[in-house]
Image (cartoon, rainbow, N blue to C red; front, top):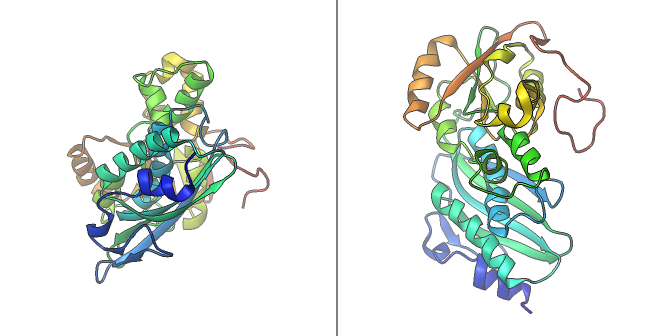
Length: 317
């Protein structure tokens, strides 16, 4: 049986923490001491992933580790921030060293590919849950927010939509083959950090699609005080989605399904070609799916009482 300190030391503490850029003091003390880049603004976000709410508890531990970090990093991507550090709170039902080792492998692998350092955290006993706070940097006045969309702007999305919902459906149907693209889209989302940084001087607003396109577009419209017109036929559907859910089901997954972690952006039409060129260099498409309008509301798609995922359904502003 392992103690929490043994688990942290053996599996979670990255070997490079002591010399990582910007980390004066990492795991092993009461606080981490971080040194932000002079003149940069800090962008900070936290997400909690709860077993059987955000991910299947029976998913491979390595996958759960990747996913817990990816969904938090997606918020930094939406602001155009460069990811730097994270801290994690891990709640476990038991001190299973093999599980923690596999979890840490997935978590640290994504840290390595996104240049993020795990600088501290906490471990407790209880139902499986992972809280990850991410910190990034963005130049002054360069951060993308939800509040900048203007009438006449194009609405566009990175990548493809509906894969998160489609992958969840495959998992619920008993599919466990991680080579299936839809299942990978659900369990191993890729935060669009490079895309966010590439678009931050072109886009007027941005949000990551975690709760579903309609729900997150609603947040953007509300923050910007604008309306929108969608073209549902233009939605870029994830590979295999129509085959898995049918045409109508695929469209609904793209509109209302969560867990896509693509970026929804507004940008002036004259910037569209340059935005597409930059994302093409990253191997990522940018698809126009509508436009911003002055009149509040949403045109082009029938709304329902449940546009997307909500933890506590109720009245929406």
